[in-house]
Length: 509
Image 1 (cartoon, one colour):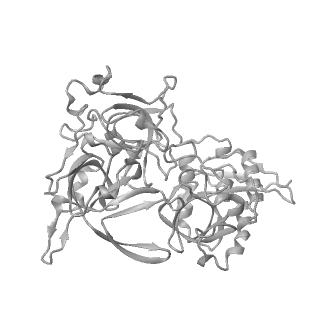
Image 2: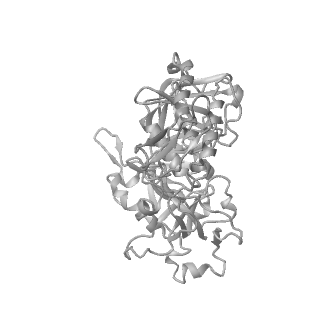
Image 3: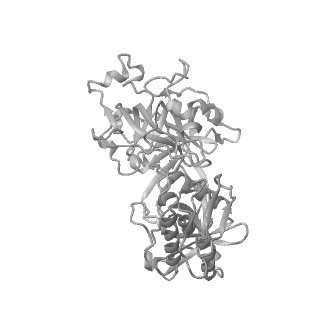
């Protein structure tokens, strides 16, 4: 068989050179012929994805008017717009359909390594590949054969099963799911054919990957810093050295494996907010101790192992979420408590004999988990809160009404309310609530009687047990919460409802 050497000079996503020889063969011979990659990060050629582009022709006539969300059977398809921060990872994306439905899609036929709650080899690079592809796309069309594959996945989030077609700047339509397998960022998980006729392409992509052993098929991720390279860090160090130790979608680095010790000052479902037990060596004596949100993921059952006031020690990584923002979190927590696990999760209750070994006799920053008191801080603009970003704070807020637009069945409706609830698009289960508020010390009334102030909204995850009716318009509350960024402003992330800690106090006169 004649072999044609292809030297790839692509540098759009990751630098390096890959030489891939005749992966589709000649004259009907489809046996892949491989050469060793000189750089494992380089993009591969995708002849199968090129060939499959003809499969989109059947949707060209009317995809722009179709809504993927609405059909319950048959082939569903339709134009969609990528949501803000819509690329969750390599196989999960969020879109808005032509009729205004916000949907989260679980991509069919692929399963990329993890890069959010957990971080696995090639996971960050798979996400980086998706982000690069989707950022440069000019249009999207979502497709699925509901009769063959079902409408939603089997997880509790009930994401819509999807194939994602995207249009390049050159006007070509490409099937991302297939391209992901052909780039060897995922194995093939499409095992049943349908009216769409995609199986043959996925099968050939799998054969190429298995033969060439690229990426997830057998090549080690050179930028995956595993548990053999652990850094002992404080939350302060993580926040101020993130570019050195955190995940990077530009370089494809998974970030270092970290060992962190801290005091639990609050919990959101099974996730933690921890505070340093001592100041980092780079901190001055008058700087407040740093806090950080630690995302354990779903089903970790940490609430059965940990309570507020406990000292915890665990291994993790660090990432930004949503990706590209300045909200740094600890992720990929090992929550295994088995003594046989060298990277196990350890916690100490205040009654534990070893507790004071960590907090010391001086409990100023030990089991005294009081927040930074900002109740009298003058606030005239959001930047006045910059110093307290990522801290556990106590602050007064006044609940306000906000006017916003929302699409209901394709019709824009204007709401004037003090809260907004977010629901899963498929199950309609509540996921989170935003309560609109002002920082109380920022409020003023103009000559027309209009109240103005600096926004400081409340973010309530459904798992906390709190709802919108725990708050009233024009009431002022003293809150103890974790301060995170929200676009150009800040928001307070509220903890699980535990009255003994007085996280919420109505101080309305």
